Every structure is written in structure tokens, then in C-alpha cells.
Image (cartoon, rainbow, N blue to C red; front, side, top):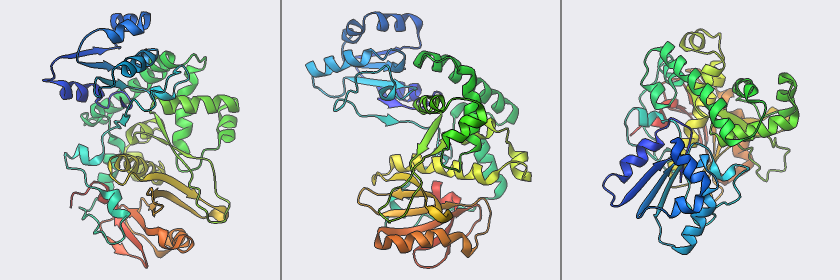
Length: 393
């Protein structure tokens, strides 16, 4: 099952993959007639055809999953079904069948910077988590170029639109479609018009742990509604939760997740930021860059063989680290993000504190910045250009 936001290229990728397969039966549930057939008789729909069955946008008929489970249990040969979904189908309240043990789920996010540059992906996360690894070399990135990348985002149709006004128009239409048709397809809720307001509120708070009570108060919405709507937006891949890290440090740590908008271009659009406002300081560049880096880390971690998880860290006394990468064996890398081109020693104080608390588990702490130099700042601490996230060296 290949899942991810709409317009990230899932259907195109799947169709390219199955070219030449014989036989193959490709159907999309975005077609009204096909959707009606799948909804009316899920078992018969799944049983039809021979060979590879490709079902696009399966979230539109969640009852198909129970029929697919029965078909798989009757015939355990792998690779008979290839599903795509523009929602996290297995997290939807209407889905009673998880397909546990029968399905491998892959996520297709908006394009990473390396993909946009058509560069091969490098195991950056694995290198960061290996103490003696040589980190990738990076081409310096100037502030205007960083802002351009951030505002462009990674949705292929938006990337192809060089004109800012055309890109903004596409993003506005995308939001309308997602918060009207797709939400109505997935959930029976009355407050569809409130979702863009909630998305904007989340975009404005992206650097802070989610305070549902504060958001509910600001928007005049019930607390329980905020909780339900955030879960729905996450199921639609419009937002992504970065969980709080709970290390055994004997400290009181924040438990609330950070909530990132999954695409930096969409996040900028939601708060009315563009290249001009981010460049002249009238929009919050620091928050935008942190969110941009956070989702790059999520994409890279999902591809890296190490399978590290991405967290944030906040302890009492104001000690916080923007992102933590944790390997399955407990190794940790701390990542701070700075929009500035220069980094002061004071920017490492929380990383140094975490290093001292974790001891050997702490592999390194890095400050990713908008400058051009890689500079050591003490034991297992270094400043690196942001462009190491898409470097090839």
C-alpha cells in the first residue's frame, strides 16, 4: 500500500511500475462508476480480474480492505495487490480491518530537495548516527536560495510553477479540494469550513509543542473537536506529528508533539508568507526553516536503512532541542535549526547539556544553518550547512 498526500505522484509512480506486467488490472476509485461498483459489492470487486490488482485511491471504499484480507487469506502468494491511498487508510475510524501481517505500507511524501535536484539520495541520517562517519560535503546555500526552496515546497505541480502567483493559486485550490471533497469522503463532520482556520493556526505554531487548549481557545472551538480534526488532518497527510522524546534522564519532559505542515510551500501559503516577506523579516523565517528541515528529516529517515525515528526534546527550565534522531539501538543525534548564516557557541548549549546527560548514547549534536561553512564546536558538536540534507558527496 502506497500512501501519501494527493498530488505527490502516487498514481504516476504505480502506473510506471506496472507497465509490462502481464496480466495487470488497474482501476481507480476516483472514477464514479468504479467507486459505485466497489462500494456495492466489495467481495465481487476484489475477486474480479486476474494477476496483479492495482486499486488506486482505496480510501474511498474502505470496505474493500476486509474483502482483500479474505482474498489474501485464501491465497497467500505475495504481490497480488498494489493499493494506493491519499489518506492513511488504516487510521480511519470507518476502517475495521487493519490487514496486520498482510500489508507493507510505504509513504510517498512531497518531493525532497534531492529529488527536485534529480540527485541520488545519500544516507545522511545513517552518517549522522555513526560517530566515525564522514559527513557529506555540501554546496553552500545563500539565504535567497533557501527561501526560494522553502516557498516552492515539494508538490510536483507547485515545483513546476515558477510564477509565484500561479503557484499560490494552485495551493489555494489544493486546500479547497482537500478540505471539502476529501474530508467529506472520509469523515462525517459538520465543521469543514473550520479546517483551513485550524491548519493556519497549526502552521503559526509549528515550532512549539501542540497546545490543544490554546488552539481551541484561539479558534473558539471545543477541545475535543481540535483533537478529532488534528487526527483527520494527519490522516490526510496535511500535517505530521513529531512526537516528544522520552529519554530516561530523570527530568520532566514535554509530552505534547510538534505538528508540522507536511509541505513547506503549503505552510508558507497558509500564513501568507512569500519570498519577499520571508526575506525582509516581516514573516517568521526561523519557524519556516525549522518546519522545512523537520519534514526533510522525516523523509530522509523513512528512506535510510537505519530506520531512525524523529522526535523533539523539551525539558523543564527551557532546555530544548528542535529535533532528535534516535536509532533503534538507542543512539541519538540532536539537531538544532538556525535561519542565520552564522552560529554562535551559545547555540550549542542545549545540545551540550543533552550530550552530557546521555553520555555515549549521544553520537553528535549539529546546528544546521543557512551559511556555507562546516565548523566544529567542541566534543561531538558541529555547525553544518543546511544543504547537507541534500548533498551527494
